[in-house]
Length: 363
View 1 (cartoon, helix red, strand yellow):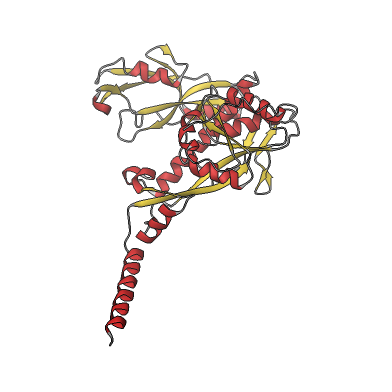
View 2 (cartoon, rainbow, N blue to C red):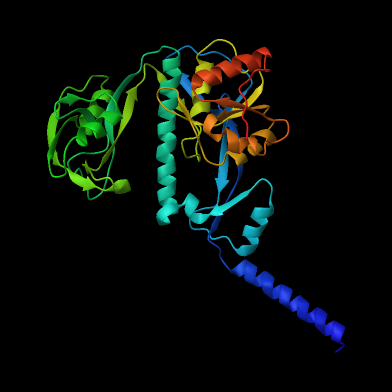
């Protein structure tokens, strides 16, 4: 066999071997890419995304699109070829697997966590929108989760309403931790609660729950961040009663990042006219009950996804601005927001065509 032919054959075989190895060898990475966007003012899956009953609503126009990111599943292992392709692809991002799924989190655990965050984001969006409209919302502090194996396990339950700790009334979730950490580990804390089942029955009957009970728990020690403090093993949250029904119909979406856009969509449907003036506005950001907008992950993919669907403006959490501004898609204008008030002010300028002074995102 001529030397040149032998060399070419050997090179070809080596290339084939490398390609096979690249396909067969798993690497500890995951991939993020632009996901679909959904107009909160429109329909999805054949029904309106926002459904409001018991209160007058108004016809609106334009787009207030929430944005999403696609990620590889927790149990999927990319191979070397896929990872290299992802690194080279402009619109995708390859990250360490543990970044998306820390501590060996399973697909089931991740899905459950995302569903819980999505549900909470809907509640906060409703509260923020209604507060902005001066519509009263009844709120109370609840037990959100109970840590397995903690002092509270079997004593407190998710959904229990926390009325007081050691006789001091609780008004905000943060009050619970403040009152518990006044103790030393091993000391007893008394929770006055309305049991979850009693609260649920009262809500169903449209009445206020009246039966309370005291639960005494002995604190344990937490050494998070090297700081020892007393804990009981719960996280506190907020539940609400709304004066009319607001349903958000959107399946197969998780996480808290749609909160801002849901709040704006609700506000738009409850007020005359159109917030956008018929323009295509997309955005992202968590929102809390006070209307504060928080940062999210995957901002680069969300701006790409929004622009690919036709968005002209993108409402961007202030803390995500620097990352978003590094590679903004052509034709998309980033608008920095810290609160729902900022977003409403920006939308007023957008629909009025007065966009010269819109808050900008800078690198």
